[in-house]
Length: 55
Length: 537
Image (cartoon, rainbow over all chains, first blue to last red; front, top):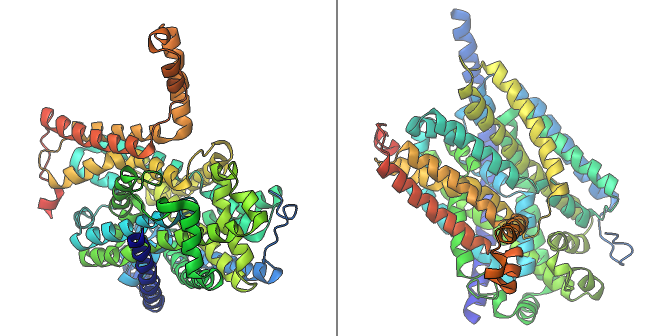
């Protein structure tokens, strides 16, 4: 049982640290990605409507 | 359940309601803003394929780490102890394997499909697409059947809201909110809402975990679980706990949830390129682990807290209570309601409700997209215009909302919520696993083999306890009608009438059978389709 107690302790501690790190990275990086996604969709849609007008 | 009558009072206050209300209003704004960006089906279903790595990770974790995962995980931790953490480790290892190798997902992204049934059509013809689409929708909707009920049980425990009418109105309002912003903004609003949920929930849950360790003490947690659950509380292979068959079944389930489940596949298909697919899935492995480990740990903390409070012990740990899935689902919420201070409670609740919304939005959109694109559209002559597809998709969303509101009210759960959900999903993925794996990597895989494997997946229904009870009664009546009862004897007839099959073994048998039938069907009935998708790529 000692083996499992040590294993689960390590799993939990590592998981909490890694998840906290990932959360910080994704929170910061994700904000930029949201803006970039909206820009990209707007550009695609503008391109489409321009093509439709030309047709 | 009347908590006040049981002498149980929580920390939820009007300040917390204000925090929750602000968050919910913000969600409406997201739907309105996103609607301005949706002009075609690609924007609506895969956000114009403009998803980058960070946002991909946030939205995948946001979807898969929902309130339902919190309820399921905490229930497993409460009833199974630390040994339930094997689910988190499996989530990490299996998802990392899929992310690093790109198995299944990279070929699917390269093929340019949006849904799995689209791939079925490319490989096995239109009929396979329609059948596969129907199975995905059925399995997906049934697996979602308890989402609202689980959410309601958790909200009840967390907020202490015990008036059934208020609770029903509140949960219906939440479903309407999801339908509103999903119907308006499609995938664009979903990814933004998922991102916000990821931020709020990751902060809230990390703080709550640390608070649990601080209040209960690590040594106290270990010794209480050890005293109450014995070795089965730590060793997942222990026969009195989960057992080896369950662990194997969950390893297969972990593979399905990141490589075969449509909500994961749709994100891979929405990624900018195949490199991004691998990056998103690899990074999400942390999320697939955390979505189980943190809730399981909270469930363990709830067990420790409740077993040390006599009034709560009677309500949640008595012989009858520990066999009632609804009661064990609520235990962690009640524990959080007692532990988390006002203010932080509002943040945690907003995170939980956000998690409730973010899972619903993606799942509802996913099944409606599959139903319209893969079941309705291929059956109509001349195809459907974008406008018609969007209208039909929104109408189907409404139908889904009604279904999930009603299903949880009449179906008796009878088992752990996690086992119910994995088994319901199994109707799809136990059959889809051979179809996708062999379809992509085995040249001789044929249409007949695919049909046989897909239909075999329905065998997963035998894993449900109420279905087993029904089958047992039918077999018992059949035995009496055919006079076999005298041959079987009273004790065997009793076993037959009260049929109880272990869910993991049933699922593993179905999985094996689906693979065998796919191979046999393909060898006996080959067809002249193109090479496997991986070679095309």
